[in-house]
Length: 288
Image 1 (cartoon, rainbow, N blue to C red):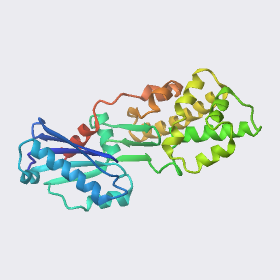
Image 2: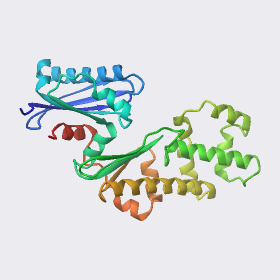
Image 3: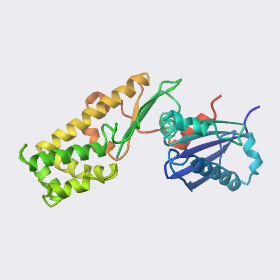
Image 4: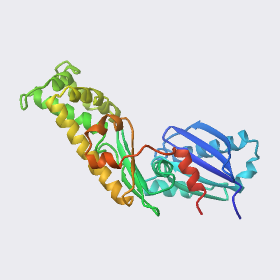
C-alpha cells in the first residue's frame, strides 16, 4: 500500500519543525514547536515531535486519523548515538511507516538532493556525516571533552592556553595574546575562575577575535587558524573519501571565515547545500 502523505521532521535540540506533503510532492502544511534534546528527555522530545506532526495535519485540514496513511522521517539531534536512536525507534508511532535518523543525516540528504556527499558543521562544536549512496558514515558529535576538532570551542581554549603561556613568560606575547589576557584584566586567577565553569559556547566566543587578529597577520593568531584549518581539512578528507569522492557542504559559524585557510583540495570539494533539512527528511520518507 502506497502512502498518501509524507512527513519530514527536523527535531533539533530546542526546536522541532515539520513539513507535510502529498503524494505528488505538493506542500500541504508546516509547523514548529519548542522541544528539548532527545538525549536529555526522550519522552519530551518525541512527544513534541509528534505534537508538531499533529499540528501540521490540522493546519492542512486533515484528520489525525490520516497519519496512518503517511510515511514519516525523523531527523533527531543526538541520534548518531546508538542507544538514543534505539529509544526513538522503539517509540509507538501512528504512521504507515517511519524512519528515525540523526538531524545531520537528513541535512546531508537535503544538501545533496539524496545523492552521495557529506555535511560538516563547524561552529561551537563539530560534527559531520557522509552518504555513500547506501549508508551514512558519521564523524564527531562526542562533545567538547572528547572531540570537536576544528571547532570554535577548541580554537578558543587553545588560544587562551597560549595567552596564559605568554602571560607566564613561556612564550612571547603578540597583540592577540595581550588582547585575550585583557579580557581577564591581565589576571591568571581570574582566567582560571572563568575557565572552571565555562561552557563550550563561551570558549567559542573568542573565535571572532582570533580571526580578526589573523587578518592583521598576528603570528600566533595565524598559527592557531592554520591548525584549525588543518583539523578541518582532515575532517573533510574523511567525508570526501566515505562519500565516494562526493562534494561536502561546510556549515556553521566557523565555515565562512575558515574557508580561505583550507587546502586547495578541500576548497575544490566544497559545495553550497542544494536543499534544507526538511527536504532531506522528505526524501528519506519517500524511500522504499
